[in-house]
Length: 399
Image 1: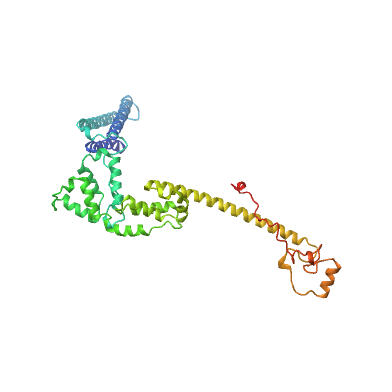
Image 2: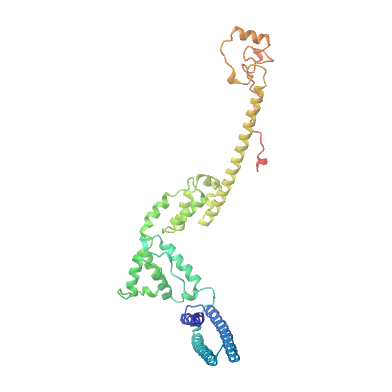
């Protein structure tokens, strides 16, 4: 009967869990109703199993009654078996009654709690709790990695995401305190506990709370350093997007006005972007205008660099092809160096044997080439006209 006991105890435990969920004002109403419906289905299924078991017990009792006269059972044994079967049936019936009574009482309690549940705590979104979980990465002030700027932005994101959970400034301050650790948490804990006086109403005004947090544990201590780094910031050989991101990060932690930021941003751009924007340099009056124009100029420079690399690759291919062609022409000469092969020409005095050989083969006595004499030698008297570039490719073919 251990399986039956487990089946009877499981709904009771589930009822308790569901009752705790109903009493939680942040619990999801849709989820509560879903579990409640599941409990009802489980109870109906348990009743069907109990009815089937009772029917089996009745059947066994009938079999024992009908077999009382059989040769295998005495009258005493038959009566004892019938009595035991009836006792088992009575016990099962009593357990079923107790389970039904406990189930009905628990369900009545749950339904009563649901009927008294305030309408204001009902969550309109079935997939989201009304109160967000505090940050895992706590704000610790200067000793932590989370800056006040990021901390404030994360708080605002949670407020926008869970508007029903932050209806008052006290709700926002309480949640912000839960997202703190270290020195900020210790200070505001004394205000929460009443160990420090709060004449300004700091713990009731969310805006004042953030201003005080920024003043005591924010980024003011590093503003002078950020201003120094911003003055030295240059794009140099970096990408425009890297320069823009770093500029925005540093400028957000300073108190410079728009004119100062615009001047500093323009001065830090690379020489290439400045040259590209030279014709309209004085027309940019806002950060949005200069950022948009510099971004387009950066893209144009990337495209130009791409075309330049393609053109250089094509030119190298043509030069290599030209060198291979010259090598073939030199190797096809019958004897002696080519007239244009300057590296193969030696200007030392010819021996009598070499001089006689060139005369016998009607070769030039200066370079050893065929088909001309010294006055027409192209090595001794090179022709300067008709010089053309070796690169005769077509850029459009590479695009």
